[in-house]
Every structure is written in C-alpha cells, then in structure tokens.
Image (tube, rainbow, N blue to C red):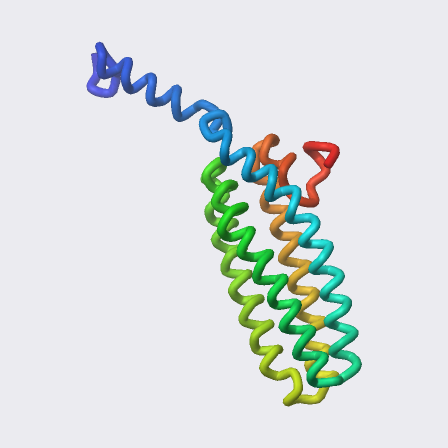
Length: 178
C-alpha cells in the first residue's frame, strides 16, 4: 500500500471526514438556511424602500432647500446603513457559511458598501454649502452606482450559489416563485 492510501481505522476516519465535508452544508446548518430565508424576504422590501427614498431624496435636492436636502440625505443614509448592516452582519455571513466560494465576491461587495457610504457622507457635507444642482447631480450618480451595486449582488449570488441558495437571493426568479 502506498503512503497516500487510507488503511485501517485511520483510513475509515479519513473517509468519514471526507463524506462529512461532502454533505450539503445547509443540511449541517439548518439555522443558517432559516436565517438566510428570513433575510432574503426582507432584502427586496428594503430595496424597494431604498428606491423610493432615492426618488424622494433626489426631489428634495432638486428643490435646493438646504435644510430639506440635509434631512433627506440623513434619512436616506439611515436606511442605507440599516440595509448594509443587514447584508454585512447577517446575509453575507450566512451565504459565506453555506458557500465559502463566495468569499471574494462578498468581500468586494462589502468594499463597495464602504465606498458608497463614504460618497454619501461627502455628499451630506456638501449639501447646503454648494450649489444645489451640483449636489443633486452627484446624488443621481450615487443612485446609479447603488443600482449597479444591487445588480452585482444579484448576479454574483444567482450565478455562483447552489440552487438552494439561488432560490433565496433577492431579485432572483430562477429558483422559487417568491
């Protein structure tokens, strides 16, 4: 027997370990599946709410009233922070635990979250100090970046995740009716 061929009890233990690793991760972690399903129902609602806030905030910035613009941006940031927090603290870790191959995509999406937050904070600082049209245009550009980010999230998880996770990805219609 070669040194790499399992033999005796050690070989059986090694084979059991391999079989255990091959089991579907979600079967090993039903709590993660439930958490993922719960969050997956919340994320599309948050996306719709954020889209409505994007429109409301954009209209407030177009009116060029400094106080209204700052309040609208602050409200939008609060909703965006809550959304990113849900993704970063619950959704992404659950996805990663069930599908570790998504690590690179998740890390990139979290970096995008930080960049988008930073852009919004800079915009908040500019509101009221700079001409309204410039701030309004920057917010429109930020809105486009947020929509592109959301599309990247959906594409990354829909194409990379196994079918049981794809059915939980917000915006993906390939796996389930909801």
